[in-house]
Length: 431
Image (cartoon, rainbow, N blue to C red; front, side, top):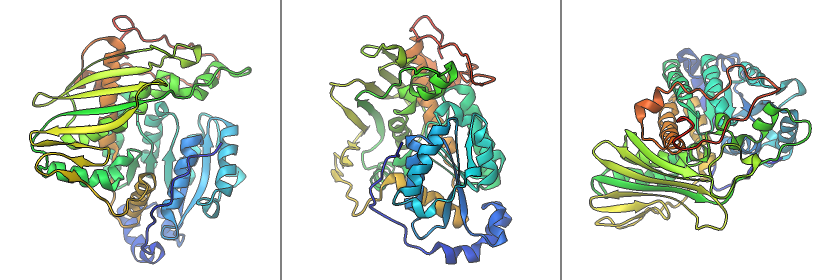
């Protein structure tokens, strides 16, 4: 298995080694950098938890971000499955950006449902690329151990998970830890400049928005001989609520995050619908293939949200923010109204790489950043929408946040586990 290869369209330029010599002692004293750096070893040991395609891609991204500026090593790997660790290790050993930064011995390749803790114990910076259902417990454990963190989005699939993440945010801030999450639009120059102009009043007062992730079909794995129930569900994680949250949460969170960024607020209520129009095969688990949700924000501001995974339809992955004086469209970063025009960026680094540049710089410069709260709120927004679509009922922010529906198994172990039912609006709970 190989991870996605990011285009090399930007790299950091400052000298990290010289900087660290002067800053390490102060940073350790403040708890900003793990104390291992104080012993004369300025290498940041990076551990990867979740060795599938996105994990391999994230390792590639952070190594490209480091370049010759930040001294990192990929130090440990963990996954529930041995074949995933092997495939990821083979990729990282030979890939252009990672081969010179790869330092994973056999005894730092961990396999199993408890493998995550072993990576946390031996690394300075932890990267989480597991299925989203695992992230609350992995985030909680990483922050408890005082380690720096990169976590893919979303950060949970239900209310109990969000509450764990919000608590971890508070602890990370107290400890001075840096946490960057996979909402890469927040690190994309065109989006950053667009949001600055929106917040400066370029389109007036914000009155509504439209956010879409209408795309083609997603992968699904048929059950193979020899897989027990838990292995099948984890390998086919995209189609089980306890692991994925459905694509409205796993994928559409990107677009919803842009809306929350623009409005500087979270929704108070969601009314949605969705279903399985095309994909009803057994390997589709609980997944819906389409959603449409109306989110109500303070001040009677409403956002129209759509997400679809069906081939042969018109695709649209975008965000449009509407104000009293015009609107902004993410496709081309276009503004209309009195401030009509495009945001033009002379050089835009690949945001999948830029987010890691920003993380590494925050660590070595003693200026910690923590994105857990903002991504938790964007994730909970998506959870609200899914809950409403699954149930056919309006769902408030408080209902979603305080929900006691914990979808993650209380004692997860290999073996039998009944597949959850397909949600039926008006019938099977609010999930």
